[in-house]
Amino acid sequence: MITVSAYDTHVEKLFDRMKRLHAALSGAGISYRIIGGMAVYLHVSERDPGKARLTRDVDVVVSRGELDRIAAAAISFGFHFRHVAGVDMLLDDAEPRASSGIHMVFAGEKVRSEYLEPVPGFSEPTRTAEGVLIAPVSDLVRMKLTSFRLKDQVHIQDLDSVGLITSEIEASLSAALRERLAKVRASE
Image (cartoon, rainbow, N blue to C red):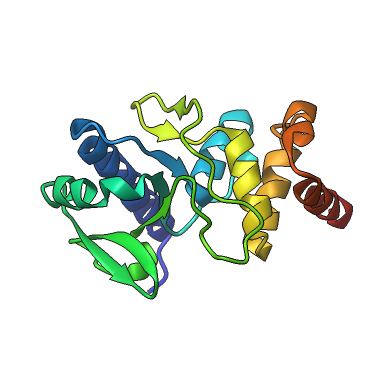
């Protein structure tokens, strides 16, 4: 049966996972930044909630050297570590599907060997009112232009549509990433 509360349920689960991840990692003194569609959503919604698109999962950048500590800290917050299809993730015990897990990528490493640039390190984060650490827009732009899938291009459009991709951010990009940004802007 179709219900109007399905969206609300999804939103509640996403934010609950993100808050539990924050509690687990910050409680253990582990550096992290929320990235991906959730971070884009939070940045865009701060400027214009009507232009923000929700995502299906939570992505986080962490240090590979902290993986054992992350797995241990997450257990008491209802997560368990899994390596599935080449991806390190924390699965929610309440909904243990890879598609709804917390996907981890590693600071300073390329997600895929063919990617142009590695994942940025731990730049100064943006904090939500709850204290959750979000990657800054400049890092998100680099990551989205590096992976450059269709959904990443849409995220770039969303960030750009509310004025978050500044001339300073654009100037800091490599020539290859600036070219990709120009392609996204030309397709709008």
